[in-house]
Length: 633
Image 1 (cartoon, rainbow, N blue to C red):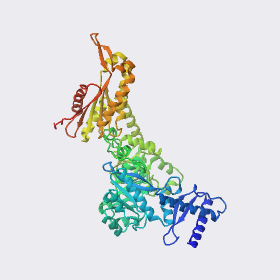
Image 2 (tube, helix red, strand yellow; image 1 turned 90 degrees about the vertical axis):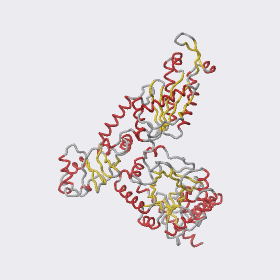
Image 3 (cartoon, rainbow, N blue to C red; image 1 turned 180 degrees about the horizontal axis):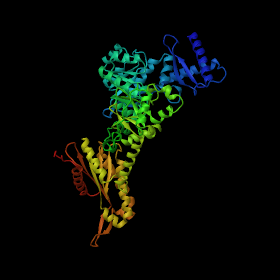
Image 4 (tube, one colour; image 1 turned 60 degrees about the vertical axis):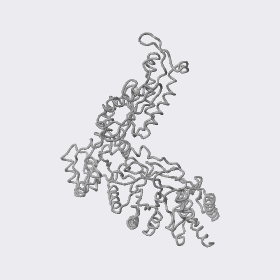
C-alpha cells in the first residue's frame, strides 16, 4: 500500500499543479479498475483544494487525501445520506410515472455531488457499501413519503450485488415490480437476474455511444433512458427529432419504453410528446427534491395539453397561421433557390425538407446578401442549398396554441420573428408561419379579450363563458359548472353605497380566481353579483367551500363594527318599512357535467341556475350540489 500511496500522491501533485497552471481547479482522481490506469473527474474542488501558483508540497496532498477519507468514513459511520427524488412524467396521460432517486452526502462538503461521492468511495474501496446504504435510504424515504409510481435507482457498480435489494424493498413494504434499476451497460444475464427478483431494468445514457444502444437492444431492458444531449434543444433541431423517432421505433420493436432526461423548456416537452417519447424528466418539469409533489406540475400538464384550460381547448393554434410554402430539397442548388426568391418577391424564407422532415430554413435576405458580394454567385451558385441554410429554425406542431407560440418566439432569438417558423403535422412538414401573422393574431386576441371582459373585475364575460362551456362539451370532458350569487346584496348597496358594493363584487371574483387552478379551471363574471366557475379540478367541492369560508371572513370588513356584532343591519324596503337584513353571504350552486349529457351552454347554464336557486334557500354562505343524474337527451 505504501508504494501505491506514493504513486497516488505523485499523480495528485502533478494533476493539481497542471490544474493550477490552467487556473480552472479541475482535478482528476484515479480509481480502482485493474490498477490506477483509469481516471475519473472529481468535479472542481476549488473550495477544498486551493492550489498555489508555485509547487504544492506532498504534505498538502496527504492532508487532502486524508480529508476525503475522513469525510467518506463519517458519511458511512453515521449514515449521513439523504435522498432526493425527481418526478418522471407520463407524456401520454400527464400523470406522474415515477421518481428518479439520488443519494447525497451533506451539502457542506465536496462529496455532496453524487459523482464525487461515488468516485471517492470507489477510490477507497467502499463503493458497494455506499451503494447499499444509498438504496436503503432511497427506498425507506420513498415509502415514508407515500410516493406513487415507479422508483428508479441507479446501479453505480460493475453489476456485482452490493446488497440484497429485494430484501430491502420487502422490509419496507415496497413491491419489487415498482423498482426500476438503471444500469450503464447491462448484459442479458444481468437483466434476467434482476428480473427474476421482480425488478425492472433500464439502460441509462442511451444515444451517447453505439455500444449503449447495442446493450439496450441485446439485453431487452424494459426502459431506455435517452442521454440529455439528444433532448436539449430538440424543438429547434430537426436532426435530433429524427434521431429520437428512430430510437422510438426501435423501442417499439423491442417492446420497451423510453425516457427523455434533461427537459428544460415547455417547447422541448411538447415536441417530445409529439415524437412519441413515453416519459420525461428535467428541470422544466421539476427539480430533485426531498419531498416531491405527488402530482405533475401545472406547467408540465399545460405543455402536454392535459389541463383542458382555456388555452388548450378554445384558443387558436398555429394551424390558423399556416400558409403553404413549397419546400426545397437539400440537394437543390443555391442558384435554383435564388431563382425561387426572384420569382416570388413577397417570399421571406423557404424551408429545406428531406423525406418530409424539415431540416433547415433559408432566409431571403441572407441569401441575397451573400449573392451580392463579388464572385459569390460564381463560387457558390452550384453548391447545395444546405451550405447556406439555418440548421436550427423554429419548428412547432400545428396544434400548439398561439399564446404558447408567442412565448416561444419572445423567449427565443430575434431571428425567429423575422425568419418565421416551420409548422409540422406529427413531425412532418405542413407549412410556414410568419412573425407578422403571429403578432396580428395575438393583437386580435387581446382586443377580443378586452371587448368581452367585465369592466369591474376584468374577468371574461358572457360570450367567453358560453364559448368555453361549448368547447368543453365538444372536447367530451367532465367538469363541474358552479353558479355563484350574493345574498342580500341590493339592500347592502342601498345602505352602504355602490362603491362598497363594487368592492364586495371584486372580493367575490378574487376569491373564485384564487380557488381555481389556472391551468384547468375557468372563472367568468356574468354581470352584477353573478359569477360562473367551470372546474375540471377533481377537488372542486373543496375549492368551493374554501371560497365560502374566505368570503364569510373577509366580507365583514365592509360592514360597520356594530352591524358585524349583531350579524346584520336595518334597511327600509320599498314601502318604507324597516327590515333587518343579515350580512351579505354567498350562495354557490354546482352541477356535475358528464360527457354526452348536455349539448349546449344554454342547457348547462339552466342547470347551474337551478342549482344556484336551491343554494340561496339555505341561510348564510351555502353550497348546493345537484346530486341527481341528468339523463341523456
